[in-house]
Image 1 (tube, rainbow, N blue to C red):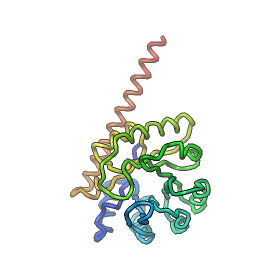
Image 2: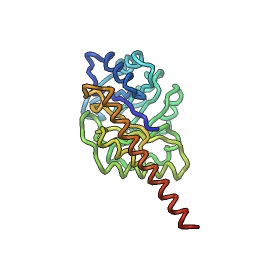
Image 3: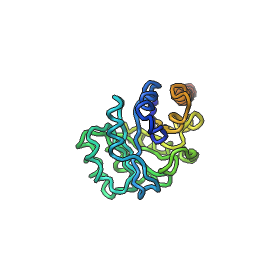
Image 4: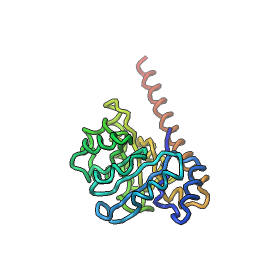
Length: 237
């Protein structure tokens, strides 16, 4: 089953409670909170207080995405959060970060910028709950999906399957009804969307359309797999 996370980066912060409620009623699976420090990415966004405020507004899981340089300084601030996402490019000792996140009861997710190769996370792949593949350069909402990232997602999926891991693939950046199927076909399990949800007049319909587009693509992929397997079996008879 494909899960959808609503990134509040595109929400109306003047009416955040109402925005959270609308997304919740629309059927999103969790909320994604981007925390930017102006150093790791060229932008400054929500701080610790916003993430904690969102946690009070919903019973859905919260994923805090740390787009910051000093990751270890912030982890203990998010004990009540469900997922903590950190960038592999920002840490020198990823096992320490992963263990620290686990020690506060959260699930660790490692993120990679578009140009970061998968071999950077090869040896921690089984230690994290998920891998977040950035399909845009991090820092700003509303950017266009980078098509070549489907190749990266597909390669990551192969690494996970070949090793028998249960690591989830998250995709964040430019996700909408046109790009969601591309990510799902490549192997994504979780879609994070911002303007495709909060930037719409009808949030419920937006989430419905996004999920349907993703599930349709997933069903097509499953059908192709079953057909191919059947054909191969027939040929061996």
